[in-house]
Length: 201
Image 1 (tube, rainbow, N blue to C red):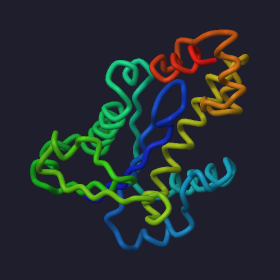
Image 2: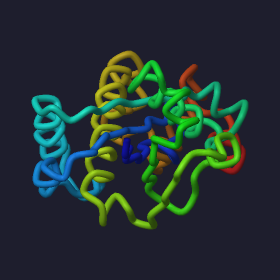
Image 3: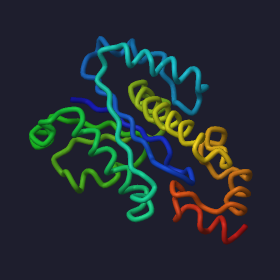
Image 4: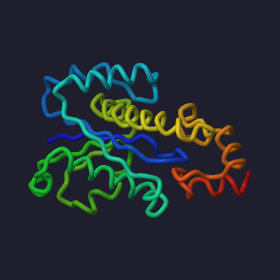
């Protein structure tokens, strides 16, 4: 089982980090991914279209996420690792036997495996610098993560309308920093990411 992985929301100041996962064991599915690119290079409309294609296909896909409280307590790398493990559990109820038999190969964007090789030394893991731009199946995983996270941001943006989450996507724009300085943190902000910004404002 080849699983392609990328995350969205590593650096924003609030709420969760999402990890997208796509399974591709069939060469016949490679053409499906040919139009996929790094989610950061696509418009929101383009991402939604490509996400809909995945939904209507037979491609097995999943996601995991870790919220701001977990990030504050353990850090962003453990939070991403936790989200990846959530994925594997969602894909197959027999994930433990699959891992132990080295039947899962993880293809991860970036230059780190997030400590998974140490936790699961029997896993086969490949990492790829700029993998979300070079490997279409990883690009598809990045779109899964980005689309699902953006949808949640837009939903929460209605609840915290003064913070403009739907516009700046929780990143540390100057506008977002100014609002933080004037209104303070919400329950969904990452305190460890924001404290220094507020203190230095």
